[in-house]
Length: 152
Image (cartoon, rainbow, N blue to C red):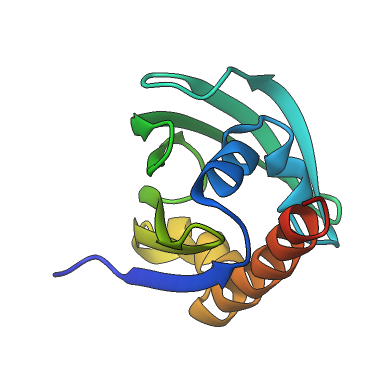
């Protein structure tokens, strides 16, 4: 059986360097997480191959612990974060940045994920449905544009 895939892309009126810089900043995770979810950071290493991010996502009173390892890190083109520990059986999220022009960049998000079967996967199926991911990435698009385009 094929793993579910989620793809989302959008453009930002900013240079490739500016987009990449925003996403390589360790503070971006908190900015890109929509309310009512709260992120509690436990460890956030500077982005590089093998770097680790460890955090808890609070869905109201429900804590979801997550450990991600980064790979394929390119300072200007993007990176992948893969869940090492967390609510899903598998999760690999690739962020790709590509210049459309000197002042416009496309951000492409590609996630391959898999829920645990049966009862064990019930929580992740409730917290990460396709509509939820779509809303999450529309929020991220808005935040990214606001953060990057307003600080030219």
